[in-house]
Length: 530
Image (cartoon, rainbow, N blue to C red; front, side):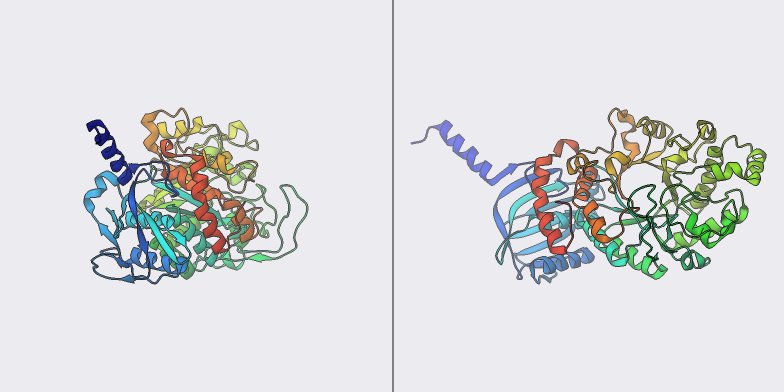
């Protein structure tokens, strides 16, 4: 006969067999906040019903994913006694889980995903997809309870198509992969020196001329080798609307970036009066910072930019518009008598002051349209580059309040400077988040170790860090194969950086969870780095 203390021990062990809490042992990327493993399994089959509730769009995407991945044709039903996946909205959860959090409960007889919003429902579905175990034609999910919400509200991937046009289907494919990883911002770099990729109806030459170049620099920076191959491509406004809707269904906001005042040579090739030199140039075939810049002292140029932004605003529902603002060399402004006269008349002491004044005018225009401006951290007027003289960036003008500063270069104390002045910051520090860097420079482990909140930042400013971005710059990425090699699997690491609390991160567990994605990417034909 068991003694009382032995009976208690047995009871305790039985309880542990029913439910145990394991924060780091579930193969989901990004790693959830809280996980409890339960006893038993749920059998997924074509007889399983999906009960959409008020989440019809999300239910349709779940149905589609299970059909494409496992060949299972689940039906949508208003109710079922058992063997179902039920999607349930509960607004009371917003206080605890926010707009994007969710509860996922897998029981032997049913699966229930509950959230305050359909975004949370969608993210619960993405976690569920990763939990399916296949054994031949049998599909099971271990019983589990997940409570989850993101660390940051801005979890971005940026695609540069100014350098090489990738096309609608590639963008949709990237959006699918972002969605599975719960990334919620697609930062679309649509214009640069080497190409203008968005149709602007008022200025048709932007795409008739600016979307094409007759050759491209090959190899590395400063190379004298050119491929001799014409390159072109742009998105019509109808295509952009289609992509925006595709992203929205996957709870991804698209943030368009229209570069100004530099990285503007493709536009100047189309309309030479936009520049300081008023010279006809061709769309550049070289990469780097070499070319003309918008003459922001010319009212006609300002009207042009406002016209462009008006069409961009009409297309993109995003509350944020990115205006670039990086790598302005200032040489062209300094050499132009009209620009110098304007600066003197407006008491602008340095070229950086002129850039900030221009940027503030654009911010004022955007705020009048109920939009918020974002830009790379040069827009604050700091010296970041060897090609700028210190006196040229000794700005006294102050950047407009409400601007989002995307930090990519410079000392990390520039983040402290920005947040202490009241600006929100997206941390995209190049040495940790640039996907065009090879794996020797940014390994998978280094990508995984990135913390959007820099070490030493005063906790009172932590809330000013909106989140992070990882950037796929395109100078040396001519095709989708090369792009995929750079993006995957590091995209998964950046997704977890933006979602998961540092205390819940574990690189070894992350690598184990990647096995699902390796199989998924193999099936999708994505040639990732191995």
